[in-house]
Length: 326
Image (cartoon, rainbow, N blue to C red; front, side, top):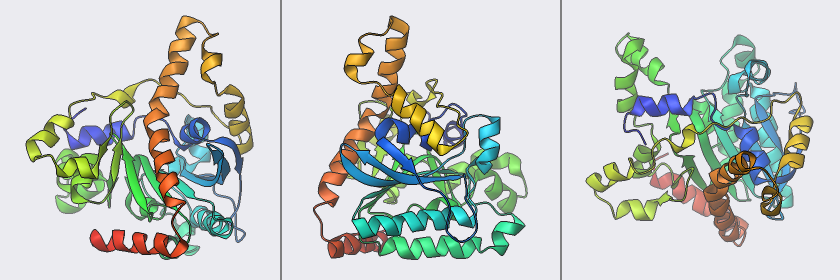
């Protein structure tokens, strides 16, 4: 695992990094996508729908960057319009009605800042999400799986807990944008990245997130982190070197229905893996192991949060954000 903050930014942006489609297809069963905000249009940068996690019905929402050039253009490179955030809020309110937990996957450089998006109320849509998610009477979990850029990421990250995959980043501005503003020189992006404290390790120490989820067997949580001094933290950063740089290519999609239909039919159980050839078997096992730590943590999260009353959920969420000064 690299110590350089800007190296982690580059890893978070890596084209072979799993996207929201990959996480949803590997962690959930029977995903049924919903479309539209019931006001203006459908935003393909935001995937949303219902699915089962170990038999528990959940509402799943993800910011999707896309997998190839055609898909990235279709998804607007993960930069959502106001319609995308309003669709997400519509699904969250639906989840509250049926007391389904909400699980969000965040991967965006930021909300789309075009003229049309601003005219249709981009800022208002993000602000409404922040307000409504704070008092949503159902469990919410947000997981940053790549880039977490500015208000576009925060609009899906007001939650009971916020986790980050290793080598993901979360910041109010990109290093390039910060360097351009502070020094009028975008080439100082590495220095800006270091100053922004945008890595998962930095944000865990600051208390902004609760967990760092590795693509491996170890997990660092807040309680363990409190027992470590700064030297131990530095050592922990070097334990698992670039695990997330494994080749991973998710299915290219034309529609949400097609991609998850393909994903459901291609998911493999342990007994099915045994019948494969050596090379195919290794690839299938690596894919399953990649998501195993996250699956275990989500299961533990849901087992606790689903036992809380609606008032307890809202109160704990409120206390969490008071504690980190938001």
